[in-house]
Image (cartoon, rainbow, N blue to C red; front, side):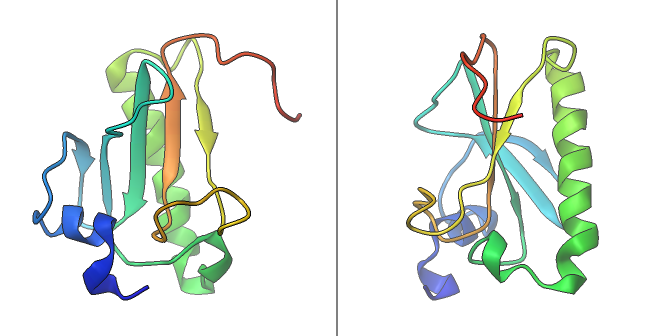
Length: 117
């Protein structure tokens, strides 16, 4: 996919509206328009990376920062103590619909059976 056609790149540029929850120079977090839980926030790098499979060594620090931001959002929104789920779909077979690396942050209810771990 070309970055010009990427929905999340358009959101980053302000061409498509979003309900922002967090933003800095490298990361944007916004509410999912089709929430799968009472709280469903997408956390994305501003740098276009198609999926986790395309992540490069130079992206490691930013990916670590994304997890820090997720924790910060959980604290600010008041669900850190009760818990939350973070999901990263990778590629077509992994269920990824938008080919821009993104982290689903789900909270606000019991998320049912644990999937793994």
